[in-house]
Length: 132
Image 1 (cartoon, helix red, strand yellow):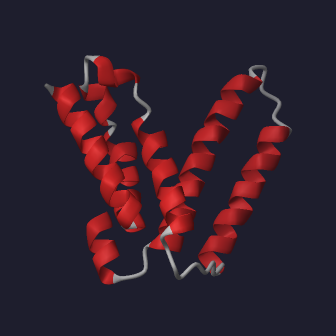
Image 2 (spheres, rainbow, N blue to C red; image 1 turned 120 degrees about the horizontal axis):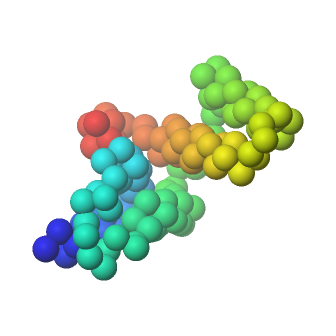
């Protein structure tokens, strides 16, 4: 039953994310924080829910969103600089197991991607309310 609810949520989230990218960002955040796949025990455990919502949100932003503007403020600059710093430290790591280090960096890049999509898409009070 949980699997059907999870797949149903995925289809509803995809439908609304195509129409409104801020709903896709909210679903992306919810799936990343709650990890509902861990609650499923059947066929939906192999689904990549977060990847699906991310791709739908990106496509929706590219094709539906009319006001595309990227402003790099001070916080965005420092977060981008921190991302570059982590890339450099990952490239020149002294760890004996580099696959482990790259796995952590891969997770960090996903968080950076979520941050930049939040700053791109979330603009109005309604968007913030839906995200919260």
